[in-house]
Length: 231
Image 1 (cartoon, rainbow, N blue to C red):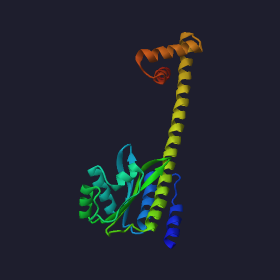
Image 2 (image 1 turned 90 degrees about the horizontal axis):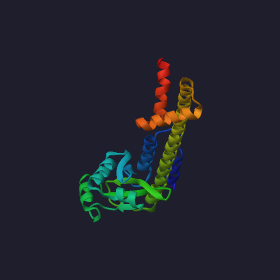
Image 3 (image 1 turned 60 degrees about the horizontal axis):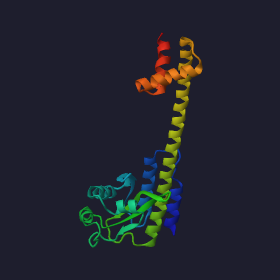
Image 4 (image 1 turned 120 degrees about the horizontal axis):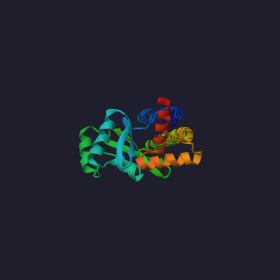
């Protein structure tokens, strides 16, 4: 099917490296809006803890529908994200689930929707949502298949972003540890020269001061080194 080839080609062209997650999700959500059969508008809902938020969207219809669900506290995009199940509304006129949400979103012109969970290491981090002003827009197997393809691409982007963040944090923590070690060694050198003590005794002086003043050892060391530079 031509649309499948086009969709997969577009997904394969999205660059993940060295880009903000928001930019990547915007690209993928745009692809969903134009590549999933029946879609007029699309959004990506992510869960931060239990709190959902729209990380990217294409078309005001999707943003409005998401926000209505957040306001109600439930809805297909939230339940798909939390429960890891595909949820489809074929017609908001006859849909009996989520009555308060369905009533409000129908007034805004939404007649059908499809929400596909985003798989992440056995858990789910959110959902891809597509909306239409026409009933039964997503009943075809092609719509679900395309939705899953995009959802998997979004999940990969989230995984990469999380991994990059963790690596950055590890690098930053390592750099801080190295800097702390360096300044502590400098402070020990100052104390050894000023008080005629050995390295072990200088470290004990630093540790005692840290406990006495309830301050980090590094901060005590910075103060000692700084006082010598002022002199």
